[in-house]
Length: 263
Image (cartoon, rainbow, N blue to C red; front, top):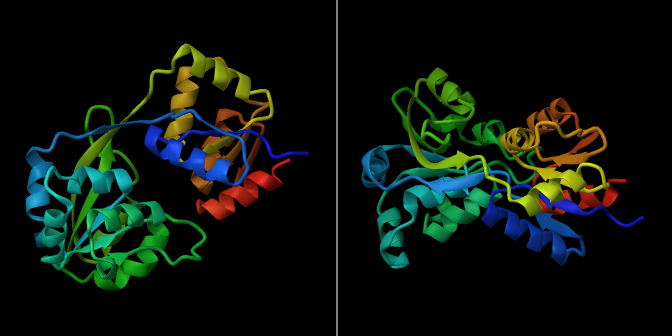
């Protein structure tokens, strides 16, 4: 039996990249973005954080979108590189995608901390296992994160709690907003069909599942199948009523292997 068609639910740009990755492995994949990314205007707290980046021991970027929201500039890439190479602030990354965005922005590789390549998950817990020794009383960390549709900081505060418990101080800044997409008729038809035709939904965010449920509130998901890149996301898929849910590490090779074994 051939592998199932995969519905990629990441934000549009990331979904397109993942569709390309899966297609290169011979898999049938379609993008159905379930989160819209809206850059935060470069002003106020975000502009100040960029100007004062050297004031923090470390800046934790929750995603590649957070990197772009804080570091993307109208200046030349060389100008950005010079600025980043002149400060001692470390960059904390929860996974390979964020690390790649940091490198592209010009952050020196020797000042990027991330989970070990073989970590069970790429998340805050795995990152903390690597960076906890850096935090001593008085150390300051900036968390660059996403916000909800109103621009309010949104997401888990687990890492901030660990930093505070170790005696560190945490500042946070919103670099982009995560909003629910408005599904077009063709997208709604795709989602309704994929709920019952054996397609495999690839989820990398519990928020995407919430947006899907809100967009199709009367849809029966008991015949649908989901592949989740974190246990918390798998729990959300089960709570939504997905009939078959499996977990996978988020690395491309692991995702591909999980898709190919999903029968």
